Image: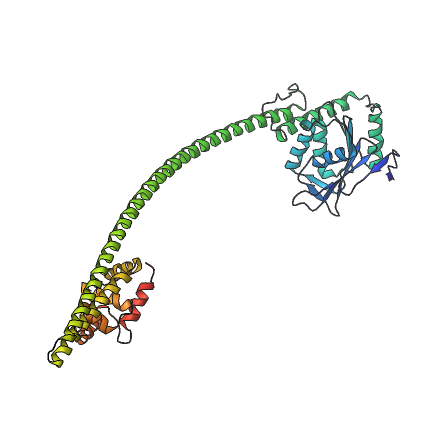
Length: 408
C-alpha cells in the first residue's frame, strides 16, 4: 500500500474508483488518504475542461471504505485543468448544498491562471461550515489541510486595508456566483457607501441583477404564453381526434351494415344458384329421357339423328350455363365492374363474353351459351377487339387477363 509522503498516512487507490464523463477524453479519479481525506485528480495528457460533475464516485468510495458520519476533507489537484463548464459548477453546488456530505476543508492546488478566478469564486461563496483554500502544490496543500484538521487555523496578517480589500473581493465574487451559478436573482446586494471605491462595482451588480430579473420575468411570460397556446392547440387536437374516433365508429358501423347486407345477398344468391343448379339438372335429366324415347321411335334415321343432335346441344348449353353460374366469384364481379368502368361502350352480351373468355371457355361453349353460331361468335370477337382498342397482335384473352391482375 502506498503512503502519503507528507502525512505518512496510507493511500487507498482502487481501479474502479474512477469516472469517465460522457463525451469526455479524460478520467476523474478519487483516492482515500487515511480514513477521511479524499484526493481528487484528473488523468489526461493534455489540458481539459471539466464538463459534468457527478457525486456517484464519492458515494462509491464512501460505501466501499465503510466511512459513515465522519467529517470529510478534500485535496483537489487542478493539474491540466484549464476551464470548468457551467454544468460542472452546477454539480459542485449540488454536492455543497444538497448532498448531505460534510466536507470541512477543501484545498485546491496546481491551479492554472485560467481557472484561478473560478476557484476563488467558489471559495468566496462556500458556506460557513466549509473552508476552501488555494495552495501552490501538493505538499503545501496537504500541510495546510492537516493543520485545519487538527484545529490549527492560519493567522492572517494584521493589515486592515489588505484585509478589507480581500473581504470586498470575496463579497464581490460570492455575489456574482450566487447570481450566475445559483440563479439567485432576488438576493439583497451588499452596497458599500457611495464614496467607497468598490461602490461602482457592487452597484453594477445590482443593476445587472435587476436586468436579469426583468429578463427572467419576460421569459416567464413568454413561456406562459407558449404554454397557453400549446394547451389550446392540444385541446383542439383532442377535439379533432375525438371527432375522428366518432367518425371511425360510424364508418365501422356502416361497414358492418354493408357486410351484413352482402352476407344476406350472398346467401340469397347461393339459394338462387342452388335452385338454378337443381332446375338445370332436372332439365338435363328430362332431355336425356327425351333422347332415350327418340332413340326408340320408329322414324326416318336422318330426322331422328337431327333431333338427337338438337337435344344434345340443349343439354350441353344447360350444363355450360350451370357451370358458369356456379364458378362466379367475388373476384369475377370485381372484374366485370372494372371492365365496365374502363370500357362503358361494351354491351351486356359482350361483358358476358369477356367473362367467359377470362374463365377459359372455348368459342363453341361461349357461342352455345349466348345462343349464336360459332361464326357469329367470331364476328362478336372482332367487334370487341375494336371496342377494346387493341392492336392486331394482342389477343382479347391476354388483355382481359392483364386487366384482371391490375390493382385499382
